[in-house]
Length: 126
Image 1 (cartoon, rainbow, N blue to C red):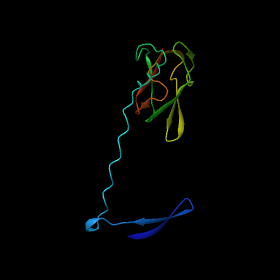
Image 2: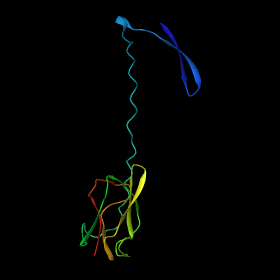
Image 3: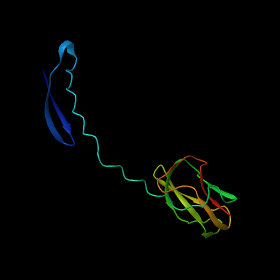
Image 4: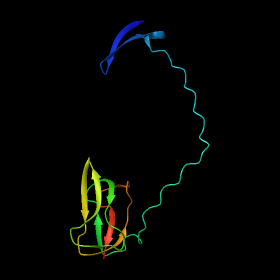
């Protein structure tokens, strides 16, 4: 047996370690399995209403890999060039994805929380 003092977050713990046969650590008994869940899983929330994917002529694509943080516009909303339509979160930064043209949002092709890759279609504008 060996005795050790281990300090975690400023609190000291005295620990005794026993070696198993052949110098290897003794096998730990298996933990009992948790009972299977009987309640059904809740349904996923419905996505925001959107026109068919890629309905508009002008695409708004993800500029970087990340996660959809916020959707600022709705299908049918009029936007001006440079207006924020979607906000992505990447590496703890919020990155606005803006409308490339004046027009109307034709489709929103993502939902809040969706993971996206660079170049993924987020929305379209007519």
